[in-house]
Length: 358
Image (cartoon, rainbow, N blue to C red; front, side, top):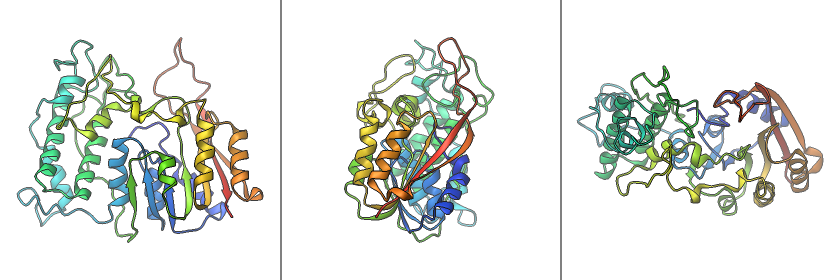
């Protein structure tokens, strides 16, 4: 999934950092899980991982890629699943073959939708919007009928969230849509079976909670991996459509506002994306964590100052174990330079901060 701060391409750097720093252990916590790229890596390399994020779509991805430890069998879908084939693949194929059904996404996030026509929201083509509606409706119906367990539900939901993102008519975030159809947006929606990490035997857990509140309730663990927001963008506004898809609209349709169709999101606004509160939030979390190692992924343009990070980590841990590793990285750009925004360049420096804790 296209996501600000996605660490998928930086996992090799993080792996090298863990090896170089001599970090050991079997339990880890990732309270800013996002798309779960690092948590998935940690699970596959021997850790029982506890993850969290305040976003619902992240919770679905966490469950699919971190909690699930065996390929779902979909025993409640006997008329869908061919037992002679891969059960996940056949279930995904069934969803891909559903007839489009114009519901909430169609009505609000494609130009032909009645509710979105005032602004001509071009997030999805009419066909793809109606297909998202059909798949989301079917997943909800199966859950409502008790035919999916939690693992099966979140694996299918993750597949839909990722498929919708691949055909979204955006430059990577949903704060705006492109005025003309991009090539990816004109491709048909196709779900793919998620590439699960299974057979580890690790008991991993996913949460949708504030990072500090979670940390304060955890039993001691080995590694605290932090990947907080770098800037002042609130993720609830940048990823509101994946959030709507994750939460559904079946019990109560969200009330939308503005050109991009934003729902109410006050409960998902983070102090970590506010200049006046991010450094205190960082200090509070680090000081509350019952862990042996702290590893923080950040970048050279982050809103938490270098001085604050070093000071807090040295005071919390063993001062002479403090280290900073760096690697140049291609900047994430959601748009081009314009009169109102000019990027400083195409490269940033990705940073890993570490301290061992007594």
